[in-house]
Amino acid sequence: MYEQLDLFTAESSTLRMFDQVTVRQAIEADDVETFYYLQSFEGRTGEVIKRTSRQLNQFEVSFPGVLRNGIFYADELVPVRKEIC
Image 1 (cartoon, rainbow, N blue to C red):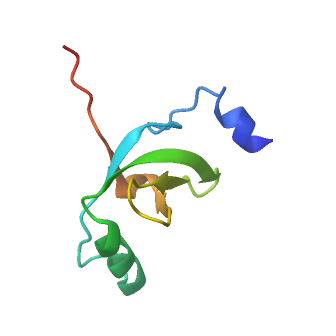
Image 2 (image 1 turned 135 degrees about the horizontal axis):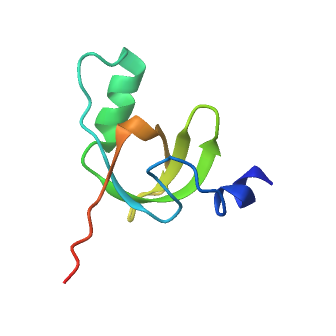
C-alpha cells in the first residue's frame, strides 16, 4: 500500500518513480561494503522503479542490459537532467 501512496504523495524527495538517475562515484570515505557496491555500479544510468524503504529513503534502480537491479540511498543517486528543446 505504501508503494501505491508514493505515486500520489508530494514529499520533499527529489527522486520519483521512472526518473533517470546516475549512480555517484564511490569515495574512500564510504565503508568497505558500500564502496565496492557503488564501484560495481558507478557511472551507470538507470531508471527508478520502486521506493524500497520510506524510512531509509532507498530506491530500487533498473539498469538497461544488466540482469540485476540495484538498491541505493537517495544520496547515492544523481538525477539526470533532461534538456528541453
